[in-house]
Image (tube, rainbow, N blue to C red):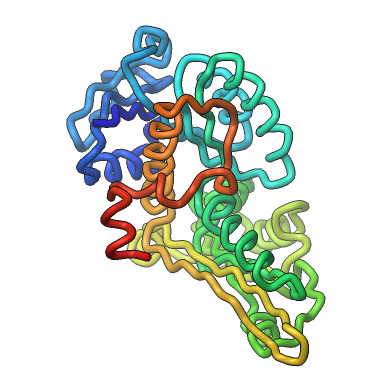
Length: 323
């Protein structure tokens, strides 16, 4: 059995917990938190420990799955915890992946551990699709669309606006842009042409709706470069229609071989972004354990790990049933 530890017990940590408990070859060794361990009650009944106790578990946990955020948690945690454990994270700040990889690789090679980084669905599964599609259809162009789905980071940004009590922000692909790609046009698309932003906002009592809407639409890095719609709704409607965390998206590659055109597509439609991402992390935790058992070490991404290492099935089964 592969013994898994979870560091962080938010939506993503709970998603990993479900995936580990559903896997016949894994067991949950414990949940580790910066909060008071007594305040958490995992649905699986797993033991909860303080992160201050991590060193006691060196050699007792095969893989630690890190479920913190990419902004401040993972840049520090992954390189630090790989000194003691094989680790897996879903670091998703694309522009900073090279430096994150370098820091984790240096620490992992020194400790002899495996550090798998950036393996959610994007980066992660979508990264693998882009690499595969571009390799088999080199004369072409990639397009990645996200949504329709809840962006947790953008939702948090809206909730930080003065006068906002609650909010959800949906990232929505522009249908006309998607249609042009699928028609084989290979257009050059700006940020605004690819995605819309749709916000559902519950206001604090007495808040100025016009001011809130203006502040959201003009927010740099989040909404200023997009066509953004703001809907003001009640708390009841928020709970009824926007309580979940759905997401998804698709990778397209449009290209040609001589005179013939081709379109490759990989898509996801997810009822729960954190639960699905948790399942991806669990699969890569299995791979990390196997690679470590083979004596491998260092940082790795979805590009470095053979697909069969993700599967609970053995080679004989994969050859007979999936190849």
